[in-house]
Image (cartoon, rainbow, N blue to C red; front, top):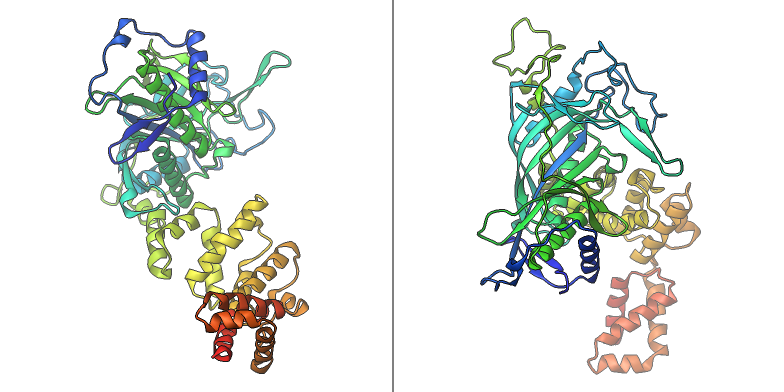
Length: 547
């Protein structure tokens, strides 16, 4: 039987079936390796009505590295790509007698994130030890917040199809169960050549916020969009750079399938997804794999899996049937974390030693959802364009700077930025900050176009010249290449008449009522003027001469 290729029908959260030969091969290979257990005679039972329909359930655990100069419980610096083991304090290495000292910046970042995600911030939260043994966890335990986290019961609203497929009805909300502070582990570097593993503790003790999302999503697209929205919020707040390529945002996905109306199925966890694109692919593949397994009478194991980016499939890592005992216990070296608001703040309290929830709330920046709505209202652009501006780092600021310096209406500016400007960026894999064209140069070019000094094709030619040859202005390029529009009415009329005289058949066709031929004549005139004539003016003159 071919494996099901699934398409998410979001309204009912059901999946329809097609076929995927690659999935069939992957599942067959996995079954041969003994990773999948088969049920016996139950597979021969007749399917009940509606049994071909499946509902998927997806929940996420997201670890965001807090933007802080030092680690959560030590003064060690936090720097990406520092030499191995160069940023390790005695506490990070778990030397006897060392004690944790809580980083106030990390607490404030967690509070700000909780407020932005509509959470209830607990005025009292607790730290716990979570015991497990990895080579890159020198203490043998992680300090986290299992019993009473810093923030609970929030929500995140996101819009599916933020591009051309955007529609108001595609807005969804996922519940946030909790946000907890915890320390990161070190990093194991596997040297296959020498058959050894090296340990780098630079990352050990770095502050993390774990954002736990309830299983309110049903496919990879929803999960990816929710994570992208969270990423934008964290960057807007400045609480995390959330750069997935640098490991600053890592996602674990919990996935299960069931028939609509029945209890949730056994879930699997896909660990350490570090790309939004791979997150969507891993979730959709895992949903397909589970449905295929159940359709064939198999059983889903409660296990941890990894996503193989090259093969495009998930692979088993370890079995979770025997639940691991983390032996949670209160952290004896840290007292309860007490936060205050304006009412409960002691009169004699030192502002440097306390965290005031209301003080942080007052300083929350404009969130992405509010920014998008403001852009639509302020500039009259389409909602999908507001999504595009925010999804690219630096693009919104670029757009606003161009609008400030040009007379061109924002709707036309957004067209140039999202098509021409972004197209060039993607061709050369450049960030907005690396663009050879500044907002001032693009604004000057659009001003020339707005006052009809040049045509649209000429403007495209000037843009290309600006991109490849720095140091010139649009005005200089227009003069050097003689791209100005013909302003002399008599000269343009003479050129139009000459074109009509050379093409009598087209003239006859137009006079017989074939207006489509006018476009051909306009093209001939533009060719004769080397693109320096305004098509609207050409058409006006031709219509007058053809009467």
